[in-house]
Length: 279
Ligand SMILES: *[C@@H]1O[C@H](CO)[C@@H](O)[C@H](O)[C@H]1NC(C)=O
Image (tube, rainbow, N blue to C red; front, side, top):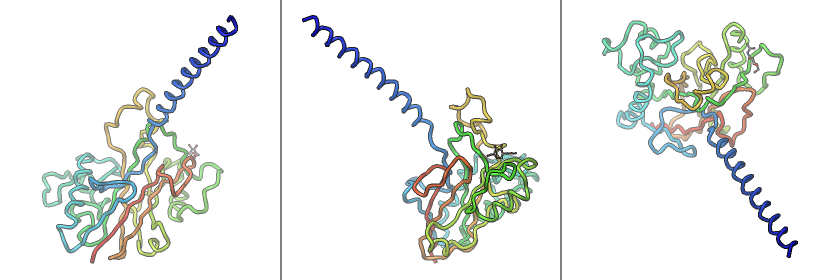
């Protein structure tokens, strides 16, 4: 009888311990999953935007077919409107065309020239079949990036695009600060052919996000990590100068940092979308 009682006790203790352990594990997992992955956002995006089939399709000669993309970019850029843009500006500073000059300060006018042709005056290139998309980082409050630079002796990966390496050498991080480098290209070999030349805007500036302007975990107080940013993060525009028409082009954009290992099946620091430009 006494032995049975003891067995029962042991069973209850074991069960309770398991329950507590399970709860603690669940809590930890829940917290971890809540810290969402470093996302490279692509704009414009439609209401039906999904990871699997984000399609940007239009016919340059048909205003009605691209006007909603143009409008979506304007809606997105409205959060960046300012009459005193930074140097270099983090985004196009106006969604009002130059004819509406009362809406644009002379400082903004200068900043808009840097962002051309990815600006409202040029319909972001959609009217001539040379579209711009905008990229920015999201969910970075818990991220401590390890940027690529030539200040450390750690190797730069050979597969890094040549123009990024050039910028890294010409603008050493010690003087010009670190960047989260960005590149876009065709996903498959046919896409690499069809995509044509790609330019990063503002032209002449490093194709990437300056870490000094990113609210990463190492740059914000611990207490505000869960608070949304007051100022939206800096942008990069990608200009497709001569994408082939009447074919679906799979575009992949990614960031380059030491801590995010490239994986074509991962969404961390990587974005993809499809471009289809009708004739
Ligand atoms: C250069 O890269 C290393 C490794 O990612 C990083 O620790 C360092 O802060 C970066 N910047 C400079 C100026 O060294």
